[in-house]
Image 1 (cartoon, rainbow, N blue to C red):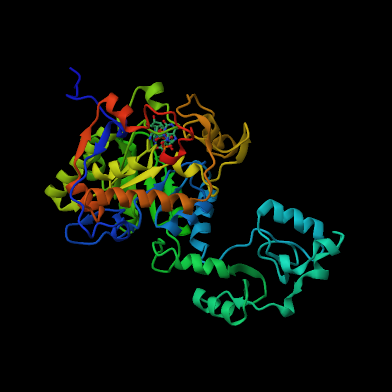
Image 2: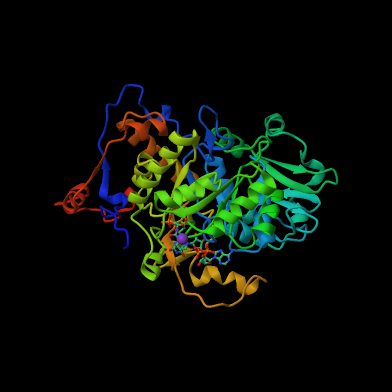
Amino acid sequence: MATYYDSVSHTFSEYLLVPGLTRKENVPDKVSLRTPLVKFKKGEEPALSLNIPMVSAVMQSVSGDRLGVALAKEGGMSFIFQSQSIASEAAMVAKVKNAKAGFVVSDSNITPDTTLSEVLELVKKTGHSTMPVTEDGTPNGKLVGLVTSRDYRVSRMNGSEKASSFMTPREKLVTANASATLSECNDLIWEHKLNTLPIVDDADHLCYLVFRKDYASHKENPLELLDDEKRFMVGAGINTRDYKERVPALVNAGADCLVLDSSDGFSEWQADALEWIREKYGDTVKVGAGNVVDRDGFNYLAEHGADFVKVGIGGGSICITRETKGIGRGQATAVIEVAKARDEWFERTGEYIPICSDGGIVYDYHIVLALAMGADFVMLGRYFSRFEEAPGEKLTVNGAYVKEYWGEGSNRAKNWQRYDLGGKGKLSFEEGVDSYVPYAGFLHDNVYMTTYKIRSTMCNCGALTIKELQDKARLTLVSSTSIVEGGAHDVIVKNEDKSYNK
Ligand SMILES: NC(=O)C1=CN([C@@H]2O[C@H](COP(=O)(O)OP(=O)(O)OC[C@H]3O[C@@H](n4cnc5c(N)ncnc54)[C@H](O)[C@@H]3O)[C@@H](O)[C@H]2O)C=CC1
Ligand SMILES: O=c1[nH]c(=O)c2[nH+]cn([C@@H]3O[C@H](COP(=O)(O)O)[C@@H](O)[C@H]3O)c2[nH]1
Ligand SMILES: [K+]
């Protein structure tokens, strides 16, 4: 006879935290959000930790290299999507690893023949008024000059002037060599009162730009997630089919952590992949596995050596897995049970295997609930897809800016294989939708606000660390009528925009 669970499965919105004693030292600035990313033995430090408990989903519309850099700057990690060729995934990983903190690859480049009208067009398009002039107009061409808004007076010029006639020429530019450190570059910027310092290699080809204002912001990002060589850390997704080729390519490209990306991780395919990685790399390559929603799934992946376990089936905003296949579990219940399994495993073996709650985070407070329920960190798709740095196209729909966000199980995501050699055009059905999400600006501003809310709630619970939150949290299920009570009610709200609580 089939097994029936005793209780119904619940989701985040059905729970609330009951405050604990807030001591005077419980202020948001003192809260640490540092959390383990991979397993570690009792009394030891994990080989990899995150500085904020947020990672971005293994999805085409979420985790590209640009988001990877932006999230690492804030202390979290992106897992670059695996639904692309091995070469292009490895190239994205390499791009994040090669993006030096504070060193920017120029996205507005012109040639000496570019006209003033074209320069003004480019400013409109990119919003950047500093443009290196290179021989071939590429970001890594031979440097011949620099154009900034101080080099031209639109009212006195007709637009047909060539950059070579108004740029600051190479011989007048202060530059630094690619071997310079960020603090050496900063010294030059101050000494020469510069706004922009071009960085060139020995053959005088442009490598990066260092901006005065970025140096300040770099100093403002004390949580940046960097490896031993001060490069940004980045993760990458893998699958249970081509891992024997994909893993070596990603490891060579510098990926700091891998994750098996699947809706259902309770499978012999995942056990095989984990064992292959252990055999070939021992413990040097870190790899998470999933997704699971119960104790048995967790134990299975723990036994096969997963470095962390991802939890969640069908709770994602673009997910239709529960509707198409009838598999899944309320996300809160899944996290609570898997956290118990993780704690029992720790008791038994002295090995702590972090768990990640994946999907279904709608409001910022859901993140604190997931952490309080035992998650070590959360994975978010929709949340990050709304930002400037996400790969999706920015469009206007009915006068509002939106970004595109599509599921990895949607036909749109699956179609990449048709253009790649991997495709077989075999029978399949859609498990995800293609959608729009409201555009929300830059990642930094949003993550700053979200983590501030998390810190504040932790103060209500009297917790200065995530571990303390997990030990002290008091959670209550709420009735559907008390959920109504929790929103604005019985008043005529002046501003119907509910984006304040997201
Ligand atoms: N978290 C969630 O609720 C969901 C996530 N997704 C996302 O969609 C994408 C696709 O997920 P899935 O369809 O689960 O992909 P998948 O590749 O893990 O599984 C697809 C099918 O292939 C089978 N399979 C896996 N490895 C195999 C091998 N080596 N040989 C033969 N058969 C094998 C599986 O058992 C399954 O039937 C992923 O990015 C996933 O994260 C999709 C649905 C739900
Ligand atoms: O049923 C699904 N069909 C899909 O096409 C799909 N694509 C992604 N995912 C999963 O959803 C997570 C992101 O969820 P959120 O947008 O709620 O953050 C992701 O991290 C995945 O676990 C999918 N699930
Ligand atoms: K299974």
